[in-house]
Length: 115
Image (cartoon, rainbow, N blue to C red; front, side, top):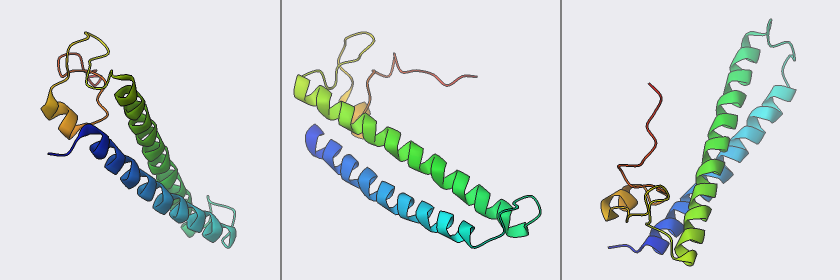
């Protein structure tokens, strides 16, 4: 079984690799857009480039948030509070931490999606 620190470090490395790939792709899309007509409304390729840029920007933001969550989990690990629910103070189940090593809450206290 992999320990919490090792699991979080693997998560961090994978996130950094994804971020590097996405930021490289983003730079390529931006560079490609310089060579096209700046009028997205009338250029059939403009809408596609704008969409790709928007999608990549969203993915970059998601990976950066995940990286921040991993870093925060490592801080909790060093502080001795990793695996403790921030809401109720009980232990977070090992199975939950294996699936979501950045979890801050137990299953009972996890935030629910808006309906």
